[in-house]
Length: 82
Image (cartoon, rainbow, N blue to C red; front, side, top):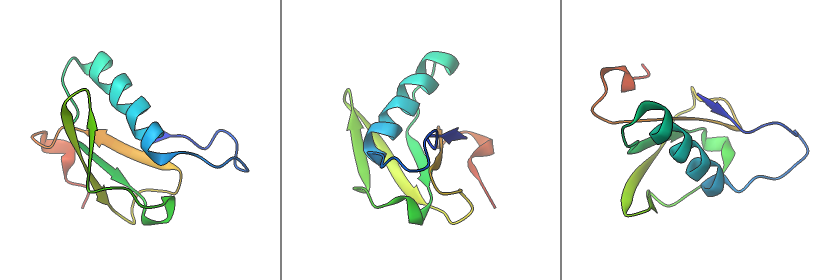
């Protein structure tokens, strides 16, 4: 889970926050994230974002808190939120 709510009054560029989380995830886990869940209340994005030639699927789930996101690999067993 990635939170970008450091300043509750600040407006955030959701795509940029996904990109930061994608970079962090890839370095930490030495695998490439390809799926990101965000809260529907966090705003809307394209269905797919492209970072360095990698497509990251964007999915919306009300279980994700506003100004938070979950990023990972679709093949991971832990991907299922429900």
